[in-house]
Image (cartoon, rainbow, N blue to C red; front, side, top):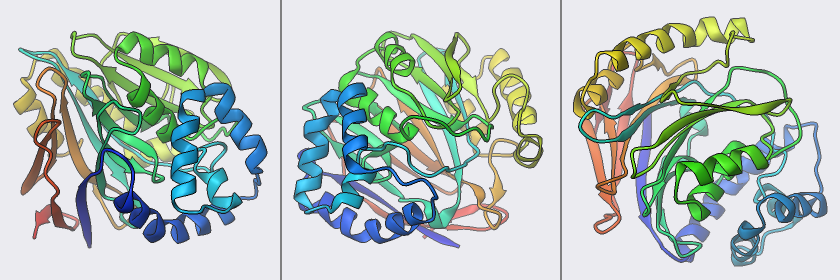
Amino acid sequence: MKRYFTSISEPIADYKWRKLFYERWPAYKTWLNSSKSIIDYKTSLEALKNYMPEMVPIHENLCNMVSADEHARTFLTGFQPPAYFSACSQAVSTLGNIALIRNYDYHLDRFEGTVLNTAWSGRKVIANSDCLIGVLDGMNEDGLAISLTFGGRQTLGYGFGIPFILRYILEFCTTVKEAIEVLHHVPSHMSYNVTIADRSGEYRTAQIAPDKKTIIFESGFATNHQGEADWKETADFNKTRERATFLQAILNRGFSIEKLTKVFLKPPLYNTNFSEGYGTLYTAVYKPIEGLVELHWPQDKMIQTFDNFTEVHKVITFNHHKSIAV
């Protein structure tokens, strides 16, 4: 199994983002049509204006750029998307410096594989893209880094897809405190664990859910459950509790950023269930003080900075044993 990884630099959205939209929109449209929930554009836009008003000019600009129809405009608000499930592990290292490290575990066929370097609101953001606007993990030029993991609960509710909320945070927040205020205010339609770190060395993990209040922990790591594992079958399959116990033990030992990164590239954090749709597609390392972003695979890596971002095209081959750069 192969997957392309592309890094794209386009501070002001233009033809590169337009090309991404035209390439990916048919698949996203099919995904949306698979949902029984139908949300109209008027309702979605009102929600965006209410909860993330600063995103409205960005939203409208992107929609106008591709002459988006009402269906696409609704999708690009990020409001009430269909359910999506992933695995993932993430942790903050503070030994000698601060870094947010995460593994993204998901289905290869549903992954964009795009790192975007943008400045849509005037603030530079480097992030792994999802849903064309959304963010799986990323960092802005002020040194605020953020990533998500699925919270392990089946409950769906009123709110936005979490990648759109993360995009909003990176566009308009500069500190962990500001990011937490957003997570308290903007509703998520599913349960997620969000870990945040900033240049000052501050870090927190938030447990968010559509049917519960957001809970903030001083802990710097998360896997795929919130308290007791509600969805036992999924928890057993992705071994969320075992990974959490392992991460806690590793962090207690005080591993350096480099050593912790190597740990993420091996089991039990590195997942090889590619055929089942939950393999580790990349390991991301965000270093807020240096403004450094790294993507790692067992046999390769990509390094980017805000001052020296290069457009790269890689092909990574995944199998049950390891991933290999081509």
